[in-house]
Image (cartoon, rainbow, N blue to C red; front, side, top):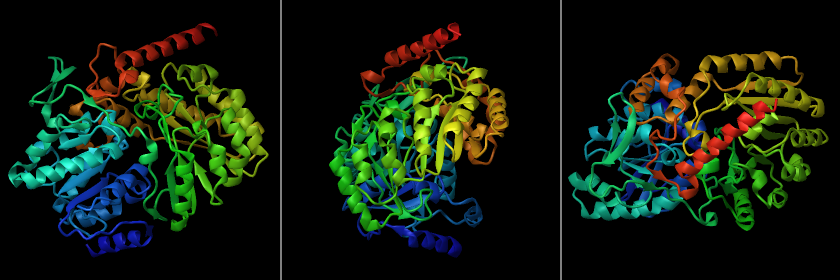
Length: 556
């Protein structure tokens, strides 16, 4: 393990802001991001939870990540996965907390548990083993694929749930015997908002194996679990705790500016499950940027689903002399008005048309025009901006072959008005819970492959242009897991053991390619997001998309 410890030491030596606490007499939590360090340390939610937990006097929170592939051989010799801060084996912690942001990380959860010598599923674990909890956006969209792994799942934003959890945990631990502790804790949390105890419920299937519903099998278990959120973002907005040159965003201080998105594109999870839209007060952001200077970040990254919706964006850009980085901006009038200031602060700017045609952008409710996009690209050509990035999506609901051709046409038009480097990133549509497109199927795998090949071929002649795209098999794995029920644990286990998802895809094609009906029971229906995200309202919007697609087709 000496080599592993040296690698951990090397990573810690590059960090600013990591927290080292004396564990004596404290409850010990290992916070795990189920991916490699470079990815996990760049996750803002993960860092926020790390800071909040360590703010508790009776807690010490340390971190662990999925080992890099070349480090796996050391663990395969029988060594247990250890935390970064104290090199403590993960299985010795009182609580193991996973932060879940991406469905394709699910197999990594099992890899990490195997390396930690911890049984995969809650029913297999004894009271002497750590309590496993999970939080993150996937836990309040559809946690069912991994429900059997965890003892407790946080349904909502961690900032609004952690304090209550620690309060109950500490009280129960103080009054319960070791052999009864987990049971007592789950019973205490069972009827409290935002806490999901998976073992309290059982899924119901018909004779053909179709999910028909679920039922509570423990007394006091509520029919619905209410999603909990921070009403006032000024009290709980996220910002970087740890900076590292080894992170994906090297030495970048990340700062959340708003949560939720007012535009609510029909495919976008963040536009729905983070409702209502909340913005961080300008004064709070300004103060936090001034504090960030003490960490000497290489740059400051402003995070939001759509920064264009932040009213004080122009003023925000002006307050710092440090280089800024932005998530994608919306190609609209607001963005146009701040281009001069933005171009002084960053070398790369990202716009997300999503679709090449006006027709398809109306169907997905993107709400931006080609005219505005080209107007922005033209103005950027007069600045010192070095690279313009464009995001597109293929396999969208009601997409046609002509829509792929329109992407190429649009790229050529952008090339004509922006004369420096252009890149395009192509992702594949994945239906997400609690969006109007949650019922829609994914496009046939072979069709998507053909469309990707066509895009690559047809854009070869565009000078100064590069095209990147997702690996299709991973998009389809995400597509399956995003809408799956508890039976997905079997596939997750097989992938964690090294099986290729593409080879397993035949087993789940009926789920990936199925367009569901309103009458179908959805695995995530037990989560209550409020009346604005009711099944009825989302279905009406899906029906509107169908009508829009039909009208656009008939008008051609």
